[in-house]
Length: 455
Image 1: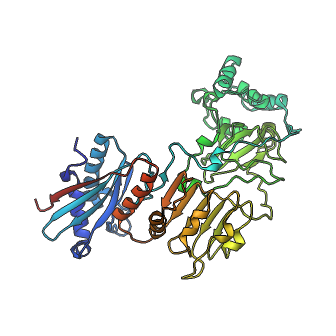
Image 2: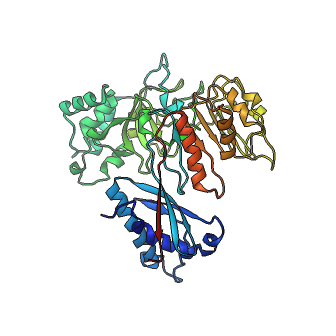
Image 3: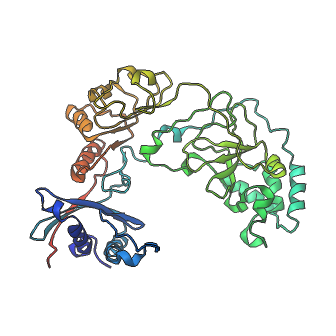
């Protein structure tokens, strides 16, 4: 297998980039950058349009695929899944290649060569991922819950289904660590839902109202099952209004997933409902959201007997947002965003050249995330007064101000360098390493290779 740090492995990719960017590379300080991974790549190459009436084919860009495949073989041999790079190619074909490796403390950037989130505290997760359900005294099952009616209805619809034994149900309860609610036990007594049990693979979905998971694939949708990169997860918040049927959690040890809606959203029994919900209600956990879920049916009996077609959506209450976006399409100022319950503040561009002070949010008890686009802060040093931050995303120049003044908040668990527009990757990597070093976290390695593309 080719070696990842062998210049010859990268030479085919570099030759393609040299041809595509000859003018840029000929300019003083000219360079090109990209990323190659096992499951995709991001290279600044223009692909030719296919002939009219024909879709693009691999053969149209075979040179690119062959060049990338050679690097992917080297990634596999090295036991890593991607590598970013920066290349400087001189007129004489002499090339300096900077390979930007992976740090276990850094997530990959999106597409390009810049680093993603910097995890400053090992195994740290954002605050919403640490939240457990609130107790709801007096919560009861819905009157529609009827395990006997449920089981009778399912046996009528699935007369040939293979049901789970009591021993199999007990085994499922043992690995889950909680007893299954009676309605879920009734469902699996009728159909254990193994693939080999069905003559018609859609029979279970048609009878129940969702794609039914086999009993041994039922799981608890705790927060760890809803993964998200720090830079996105830190922007989420757990909100459960007093009239909510479902708690706005990332996950809960009382959300028992037993199915899917066919589009990637999980269907679960909710044993930890919101203030206006019912124990055992059926919820949809959306795959496009980081928090919360929606009620699909008041009970599993309701789901099966009435087969609701979509979740019952509830209008949000008129409350100040705990996640505030200050920008031209959102809130008009930091002053408007500030209130005691504010958790996340994102500052974008409102008017060209306008900068925002952070005085109105200094001292807010729950503010934990600040994200500010480059050039939007009047005085980055005000960040030093935000002692409760756990995540901070800033542009390179603002990070430079904080680092030089030694006022980077030391309570951070994660951070990100916001890169907008075309920025040279190596200075961003160096800046990220300065931040990582403050927490003694593993740095992003950079390996320099030299070679001649003319050989």
